[in-house]
Image (cartoon, rainbow, N blue to C red; front, side):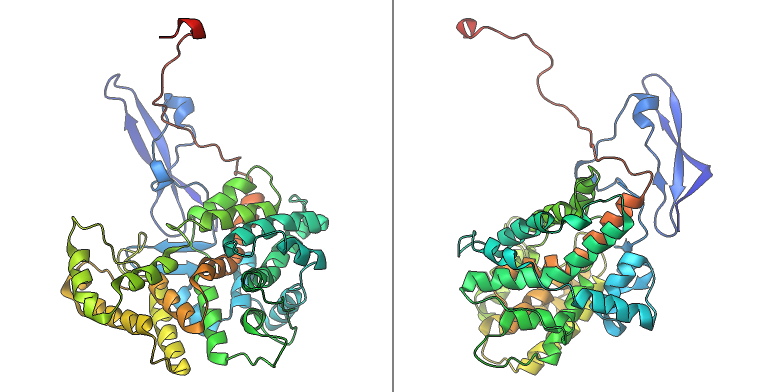
Length: 437
């Protein structure tokens, strides 16, 4: 669906100093708030808008993901995230995000086959990993290796060619788990594991992460299902920081591998993809269940810098729809693994119970969010905190790819060029160094 110009609705902008006024057109999407079209604002008025973080600015039109933070709604191509997490699988969601519709059985089978048979990495890439220090953060490795893909796959760099874009897109979706697993195993000094074509996407990821050449590794179906849900829930999230980074990099005509590497670099920031790592750090800071009341008290104190990580959400003012699914998944994983002697997980479950019952949290709608539960699941599965953001990158790759494709195909899209409010010196004359006091 395309935007529609509701010309009967305009926004009047008035200059109180001169009395001049301008009528700005209002544009309406299929759902969500209307937007004021300011594309001619500078040309007509000589003024820019000032919006740090672009929190009130629509940078593009998109038909991929919709979020209503007030109502706790998240949809991919119109489908509620709860339905997709319950009934779909990650590869089918990838198809949906890229093509806009759910596949038929035949389309699904072909897409599954294409993804499965592109999971292997170019053999020379294995040597590329060896250029990193053993103690390199896996996200540093991800940025470098994904960016290097453009040096290995020259046949899919023409962004004007739809076939090239499709090949590059499916390659990245297919190879990202292999790259992530290799980054993890390299940090441990373990041999790389080749993917298996008889396993599905999430099973293959766990197999490449945790199997060894010494004995047969059987993928736990509960953990594979949990991983698939995690990937679905993190597949896309509208125009967030990393997605905007991918789009603005792509607006220059950069190749898709470079654009996705830029997105990974942005995701690495602790304010974006590192939130579930912060949850584990907070739990370690609290230490034990006996200390919870003290930290709850600190969290309520506005003058105390301590904050409970993994509660509430910047976008969702009611509840995070992904958290409900993730909570169920977390409890399924903990039950299946029978973990009874992990103090950190016991602490997390007690904190969850208090937060769901405490009047302070309930009244302010500070419910556990998706990062809280994903951190618990990863901890239970034996995934180190340094890999948390890497798994986020694996899941989000399809969202970045879909957004990048949409951006390339949008005839109204221009190269990203934000303006600024300049607060430096006005023009001044150069002074010879000998005359400077």
